[in-house]
Length: 186
Length: 186
DNA sequence: CAAATAATAGGACAACTGTCCTAAAAAATC
DNA sequence: GATTTTTTAGGACAGTTGTCCTATTATTTG
Image (cartoon, chains in turn yellow, red, brown, cyan):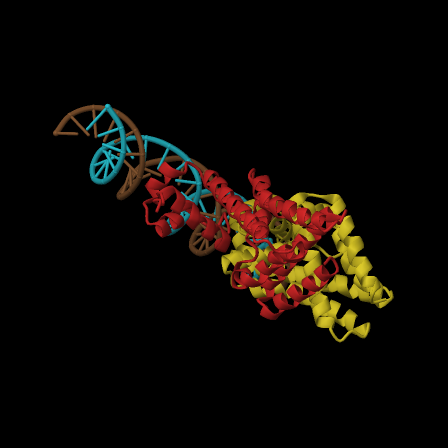
């Protein structure tokens, strides 16, 4: 049982708050309150807000990579691996309705802020894209690149509308539609 | 030639800045500087930032309705009317790459802020949805509601990824894909 | 032209932001 | 147990935020 350092706890809480409230709208004071440290102590762990954001993005990259590796290791058929990706929409349905997709909303926010870490945040998208492309290539598709982009775009759109309309049925409908589309590749 | 009042100019500039920089990240001071009025004078036109946001949303609703009415009046076939909607992605390509979709990004931001005007902003989506549903109904589809949602979701996803990857070709690819999908209904 | 209304400018206000300093407490090391 | 290093708390700092007040200038109305 390894001890969880304060630095890690800060990043984990910041990760959640950035997702639920947005990066800019989340203040040091609020994170400090949630982590239960003083604002002054914050500076010891992270000198700037961007430094903290960088750590949050690295955490997300690591978590995403881990998830993709797990899907790869489960020993499913390729097409079912892709369905794992689609299933995120359903299993994270509640959060998505409340806060949208964590990847899409962060990159959108950083884009508007002209934030230097925008490209860094986009790497999460690149991770998904590389993995999906690899799957479609395994299915012998030479348009794997486009197919991967298309599938990510689809799920992004579903997340955006689910967040706007808070409609549970909509996600189910779209999941079904996507899976039917995937049947063509099986 | 009707005179453009200062109040209207404020709303128009705020509309642009909210789109390019986000609602929260845009300050009164900045809008005042762009409109070339003093910060003090701002209070005469809009008492609170939410009041200004409300006006911006009403402007967007009005502009959107106008655009939909124009598409309706152009006398095209129904399927080509729907293609008008798809074409926004291409004709607004540059802005979308820089700032994403104005509708999707605003609703996403307001959702994270838990802002009371979130539902008001969502009405722009409802406008598009109602119009698209009507078009699909004209094509005799009894799943017009779902089809309209699906098409909006698609374009939202395309906008999100185009913004993240700044990829011009991607939008073209997806436009083509959507139009091929629409061919089935012709 | 005079009176009333509309519009503007400049600044005050408290609250909050990210950042940073310093002194004290806790923990680890020797 | 003494010393060094790590971690913490509290507060200061200048800058910005949305909001609001008041005095002055334009414009319209009678």
